[in-house]
Length: 254
Image 1 (tube, rainbow, N blue to C red):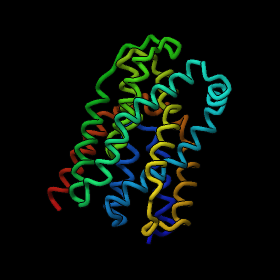
Image 2 (cartoon, helix red, strand yellow):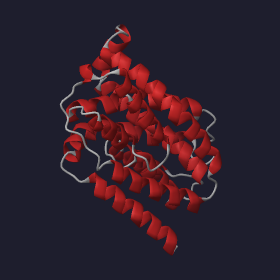
Image 3 (tube, rainbow, N blue to C red):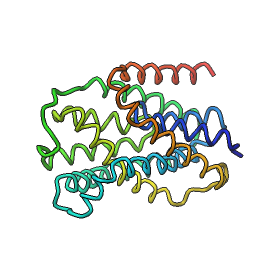
């Protein structure tokens, strides 16, 4: 059974790494499988559940943008949310079902996470020369963005890293790309939570789940702006590749 301090640490890990292009889901799964002894399938489900906290932080941080989109569905932000979410479903739902049923062993899941962290690092090397703004986005931009986000259901593929890479390759300005990446995460997390409704809490009781979600919300909200600024100065591509290689090395040794 997960202890309170472990649940809080897990939530803090999610809250901090969600804003960084280093796959919060991959980091959470590695922590749960390697340190807490949770099965890969349960760790996969819990890693999705933890996003409830950071999703709430995004809703509060960007509440004005969401309210405008809800009040007027014809706005550009509303179109981005709708079209990108459709694209996310096209790739995300099949991959969710494949991963949820297809990986039973801890070593197998950990090898996949290591390989996907390396892939995330390679994706982060792709950069565009940003000059376009959100108002310049067309339907193709939004579909590509959604399709890219769908792949982040796989642990190790960074949602923020993948969506930022897609937006930057479409020549969006970096500040616009960051805001869009945060905002489109909300319907994606809601969809993942809906798919994951059958979660069993045999390893993470309700109290522990609540603590982890609360910790992820607090850590995520407090560090959002700080880590956005920090991420602009750090080479996360090299970090992801190093983490992935280290993960594969540890699996090979042990």
